Image (cartoon, rainbow, N blue to C red; front, side, top):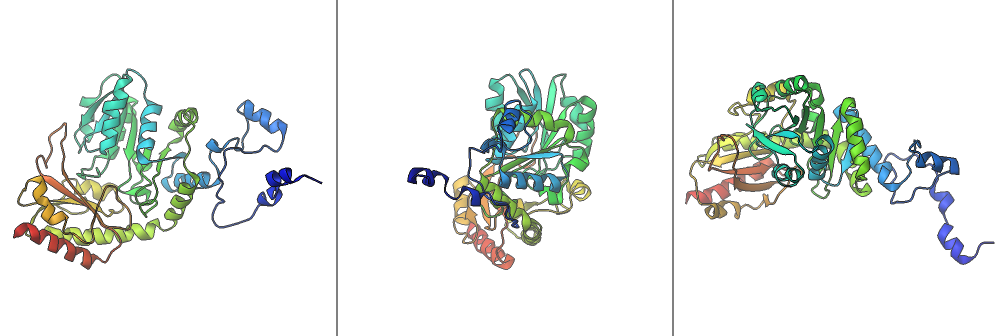
Length: 387
């Protein structure tokens, strides 16, 4: 007969370990994982244990999400991270060393640029920036110590598209690792591995989870690059919150339905804006007016809900408040890919020549609202600038 303290510690353990066949994976909250035998622990000590030895190794929800992403992307393996920039940082850390040189496309996510220029430079890794529409001409930017080339196609603020297969062909010839941030298209609308890319990154915060309540990133690689990447993740004890992985896996189940709605609504709004008297340029890869539209048609299976536009008349930054602050359905906030429509605005600077230098670009995330209501909201907002 066990005493009360022992009962408190051990009660219900047998029942908790029952194998129940549910549709969704179990949600474990655990650091310690118990071994079935001492021999298993000895194998773990020697790095030969094939099961899960500790909570940082990845528990059921994380493993299920990573397996689903691996299959979806046609990759060899996938790791989940606490955010998109965590995923980006780990790729740059895993595949570079002191003295290496990396090439970054000019239109990348701001924190990617900041990580390269700030953190990586402290450890002797130098970065140069390619034109945002880079293609076969990348050879002239490469050096003897170029180790990695980072793409974002299209860029999530200015939407330039790179010639991905042309770039990966040169990378393979030169022994350079090719990486792409594929968040805009998701694995549904672009398969980077079929175009020769070595490493694909997703900010799962966006379309994968889809509800603006989770921070998560993923990295998927080819078989050739997996061991090197996995080793670095093991050293850093990389894992993602189980609840977030569970939610991301749930988001995957409806991704094809949600993304199609985002695509159709965004195209509707974009085509409407093309003919608006206050608008100068609509920057959407699926429109024929986009400079790299033919590349989009060749490589992509669809478009998502994120695009930008500029105005015919340029105003001082604060003068745009009359438009932005009057919007009722567009939230003013960072991130995108969720059910709520959002707007951001800003002027961007590039290392290379840039079509929108000095112009304010408004970026729209078209959510799940009725598209006619969204157009009416934009109409009343833009009218404030034309008074």
